[in-house]
Image (cartoon, rainbow, N blue to C red; front, side, top):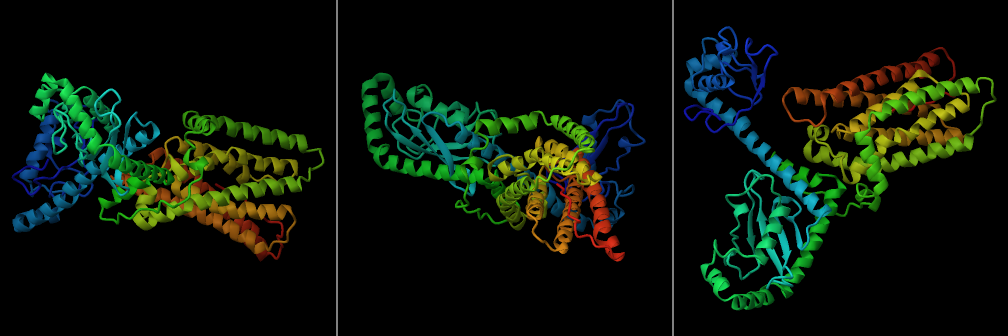
Length: 584
C-alpha cells in the first residue's frame, strides 16, 4: 500500500519477487508490476536500491527489503536514479513531481486494483450463477434482476413444508459487494414475513452473513441456511424481540400469525412474480450459454468504461449446443480430450506409419477412383466448416467491436455454450480429417511434405490447446472454419469434375497464407501483452508452439504458392491441376 505521507497514498502496488537458487547468499530479484512514477523505479519495474545490489547481506529478510522499498517511496534518492528525467523533476519542481506521481497512482494503482477486485468478484458470481442453473437447490432459485447487472440479484424461497410458511413464495434481494467473496453479500427479504430473526425492513440475523462469513461459502449455501432459519428460528439472537418472546411463550399463536402473514403477503401476487422470476433466470441462463461467459465479459467491460449493451437473447441456440456439456457422449469426449490430450501424439504417429505403409501397399496396385466418395467427404467437411464459421464468427466480430483486439486475443470464450461447442468440434475434427490422406494414398496422388506435416502437427496442437482453453483459439477457429469452408467446397466440386478457373485455387492458397500471417500476428500480440504484465489467458508454451507451427506453415505455403503459380507461370507452363493444400 502506498505510504500515507507520500504522493502514492491510497495506491495498491504489485511486485514480483524471484528468489535465486543460492538465496540468501544472493539477493532476490524484485520488480514492480504496477506502473509507478519514481526516480528509482523505471518503466520495466526495476528498482535501484543498494541492498538489492552491492549492499545485500544474507542477514536481510524479504520483510526488511519490502519495508526498505516502502521507505524509498517516501524518500526517493534522486542522486542515484534509474530515470534521470524524473529525478530532475524531483529536484527542480517537487510540486510537479508530486502531482504526476499522484496521477499515476490514481490511474495505475487505485483504479486498476479496484478493477481487478471487481473482475474477481464477477468471475466468482458468474460461476455461482452457472452452478445454480446446473444444480438448483430444492425450494430455491436466484439470478440477476437485469442481465447486465451481475451484482444485484433476486432470489425466491418456497416456504418449507414443515413450517408456518408452507406454500409461501418469498422474494429476497441480494447485493454482492465488489470485493465478494471476501465480504458477505447483503441479503434482505422484500416479501413481508413474520419471523423473530427477520425485521420489518427484511434484514436477516444470520451469523454467516456477519461474523461467521467465509469466502468458501456460496450464495446457494447461504439461501439454504435461510431456508433452515425459517424452519428453526433462533429466538436467543432476535431482530424482533416481541416475536421471539411469542415464539418462546406461545408457539401456537406464533404459528397462526406466521401463517396469516404468509397467506396475506407471500402466496397469490408473489407466486405470479415468482413465475416471472423463473422466466427471467431461464433467459439469463440461456444467454449465458450462448456465448460462454459473454454475460460476464459484458460486465467486465464496464470496468473499463465500455458500453453495457448486451447481445440480443434472440440469438438462436440449438439444443445440441446448449446442452453439449450435459449430453453423455459429448461430455465424455470433451473430458477425454482434456485429460488424455497426450493421446494425440499416438494418433499422429500411427497416422504417419499407416500412410507410409499404405503407399508401399499401393505401389504395385491400380489406383482407386473414389471420385464420388471424395466429393461426399469434401462436401461433408465443407458444410461442417461453413456452419462452424456461421456459429463462431458473430462472437468474434461482436467481441472485437465491443471490447477491442486485445480482449479478443486474451479472454477466452471456448469452454461452454455455442462457441464452446464449436471450439471442441473444431479440435476434435482434426482426428477424422486425417481421412483426407487416405484418399490421396488410395488414388495414388502425390503426397507432399506439407500435407502430412500439417495434418499430424495440427492434430497435436489443437488437442494440446483445448485442454487449457487457450484464448487465442477464438481467432484460430474462426479463421480456419472460413478457409476450410471455401477450400473443401472447391475440393468437392473438383471431385465432381466441375470446370473451375485456376485463379480460384490461387485465391484459396492466398487465403491460407493470410491465415498464417494473422496467426503469427495474434501470437506476437499475445506474447507482448503477457510481457507487459497484462493478463492473457494463453500459456507461454502454447504461444511458442503455435508460433513455430504457423511460421513453418507460412514458409511451406509460400514455397507452394511460388512453385505452383509464380515460377511455373513465368516459364509459361500451365498448371491446371494445381490445387490448394489444406491447413489448420
